[in-house]
Length: 174
View 1 (cartoon, rainbow, N blue to C red):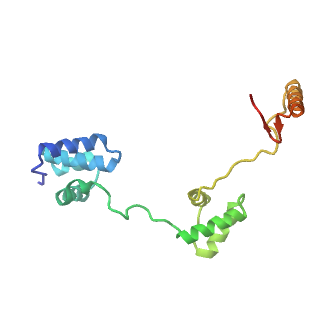
View 2 (view 1 turned 180 degrees about the vertical axis):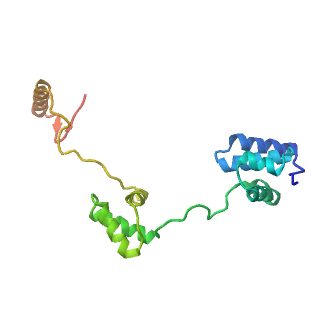
View 3 (view 1 turned 45 degrees about the vertical axis):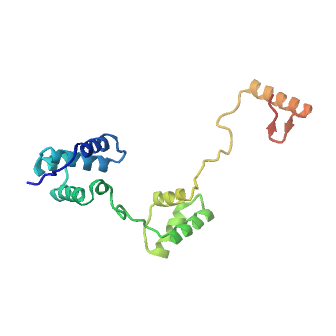
């Protein structure tokens, strides 16, 4: 049996505040585990509550004993690593610029260049990281305009052109 001992009332209040207000789920979960361990919950009970392995619970408790609150944060380097280097991503960006409507062609260039099969979604994600995007361009009107409204708008446009309040594609609004 292993329990966390020697927590001051101030520390316990801070733990409860972190448990209720932290924006990170894992930090809330770890602080809750420390609180429950201090209150006398067994390791097997903590495993059932948090639905994690015994090693995970022991890692949380060890991290608390070694570095207190700093032990709640994830260490750097965790999570999935990027599939492409920055130079490869910039090359993908250039290929997409050449053929923006045909991501399949970019896909077919990636395979022989780096020996990696990549989906169109991954290519879109990379392009999105460069603040690029795709927009649908309409080739015409969605539907034909109402005849009398169309003629009225054309007359208003002609009147604006005559009065000089019309400059190219902009109109002066009063």
